[in-house]
Image 1 (cartoon, helix red, strand yellow):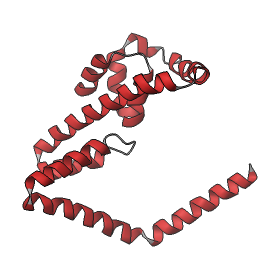
Image 2 (cartoon, rainbow, N blue to C red):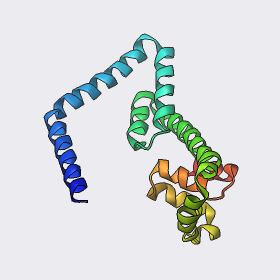
Image 3 (cartoon, one colour):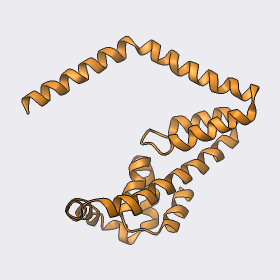
Image 4 (cartoon, rainbow, N blue to C red):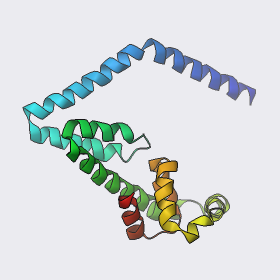
Length: 168
């Protein structure tokens, strides 16, 4: 355990040193990417739209924070950016929920599922009473990606989840 702790501290130290030395380069790189995306809007709108759809679709399937992309969509598309974001958030949520419900749940070993996941989910007895409010409130408490996986493992109907997810 001591060796693992030392390796962990060493890894974090190297990462922080690299991050702070390359901090300016990182922001320059991000700025170049954003300027490229925005320049495509004026040159070829269909290519720009395809790039934004691709970016949104795959970004909303990752455990990264969704707020920066919602802001970017609002900046690029105006008020339609919010609608654009809601559509892709809902689509991404439905895909992650379905993956969790139909793939993770069936392919996790029974011992792991019974021991860990079911015992943790049973602790949340409040979910059985107010599922609507639970999904709505947990949307703002639990990170987006994990929220979808959690409710996929919890025995919910996808239509019910989809409607509640869209309304929040």
